[in-house]
Length: 494
Picture (cartoon, rainbow, N blue to C red):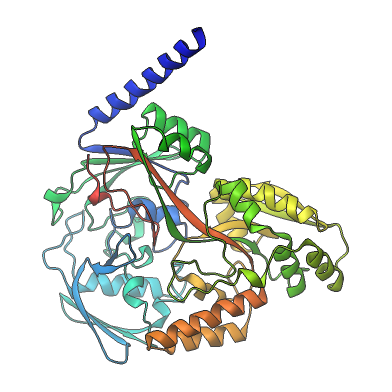
C-alpha cells in the first residue's frame, strides 16, 4: 500500500499547489511560451514570430485587428473605404488615442510607421510584399490616412492587422526593440533575459474597464517536460502553444485543466537551400521529398496531430489545394532521382534544428528517413537566435521550421530569401495574383502558385502546425487557433 499512498499524497500536493496558485491570481496571469523573442521586441524590424506573441495587440496595435477566426475588424482605424480598383484605401482613425508615453496618436504616426517599413535598409519582413507596394501616403487631416497602392492587394486589410504593420510613434520607435511603446491595453514593464517578460495594464487605455488582467508575465520554457512540470506545479497558469503533444491526454484527463486543439497558419517544412549544390538540382530536392514520410513524422513528433501538406499553404487557407500526391513517400524513387542527378552516395549534409519539438523530434525522424536513401544528415541543434543568424541568413543545407505567417507564399518571389529560390515563372504568377481583384480568379491563381512550388519542390512540405492550448480551467479567453501568432490578452479573465 505504500506506493499508492505515496502517489495519492503527491497528487494531492500538486492539486493543492495548483488550486492555491489559481486562487491567488484574480487579476494577473502567468503564461508559458516556447521561444524567447529575438533579437528584440520590434516586430516591424525583426522576423521572429515570438515577438508578436508578446507585443502584438497587447502593447502594439495596428489599423486593423485579426480575430481568432481570421476575421478583420477595426482597431486604430475605426473604419475605411476601398476604391473600386482596389488600389486606394482611406482609413478614418480613432480620436483621443495616446501612446503609453503620453504622445498623441494621429495620421502622422501611420505615415511615419509605413514609410519607415518601406525605407531603404528596412528589415521589416513585409517590406517587399506589403510596404514596397505603397506608392504614396496622404494625410489630409490628423484623423484620415489615404494609402495608394502600386497594384491592388485583396489581402491589404488583413496585412494591416499583422505585427509587421504595428503603428509606432517617431519619438519612441528607435528603442522599440528594448522598450516597446504602443497604444495597446498593456504596457511593457520588464524583460529578464532568458527567463520572462512582464506587461502591466494600461490604465489609460480607451477601453480599460473591459481589461481584467493587471499583470501578465510570459515565462520562456522550451523544454516540453519542463512545460508539463510548470503547469502541474502551478508555476504557469496556461500555455497558449503547448509544446508537448505526448502529454495532452494527461491534461485532458485532469479536471483542473482545459485543453483546446486547433490549427495555425504554420507550414512545417524541411527547408532546402536551393543555392547550394547539389540542392540546386530539382531532382535532388524531389529525392529529399520522396524520402520523407509525412505520416511517420506527424505520428512520431506530433502524436498524430497535424494535416499533411504538399505545398506552402494549409487546409484552412482560402484556395488551398491538396498536393501531397505530387510528392508521396517513395524511397526507391528517391534513390533513382539521386542517381539521375549524378549524386554519389552517401551524401553528407547538415540538418539544422531550432528548439521546438516539431523540429527537434521531427528532425530525428527525418534524418533516419534520409539515411535510408543514402543521405547522411548530421543533426545540428541550435538555439533560436543562432537559427536566425545562421540558417535564416542562408547558412545551412537543410533545416526544419514552421512558417507561421499567413499567406506568406510571396516570400518565394525573393531570390535573396533564405531558401534561395529564383524563379521568373513564380514571380510572374505572384504578379498576376497581386493584380487580380476578382475573388474567384484570385483563388485560381493561388492554386497555380501552390502547384508551381510543388512542381519545383522548393522545400519538402510536411504538415500544418497544430495548436495546443492548455490552461487552468478557471482561465478564460485563450485562443484555440492562431491565424497569426499573437495573444489577445485583453480578452483574458478568471
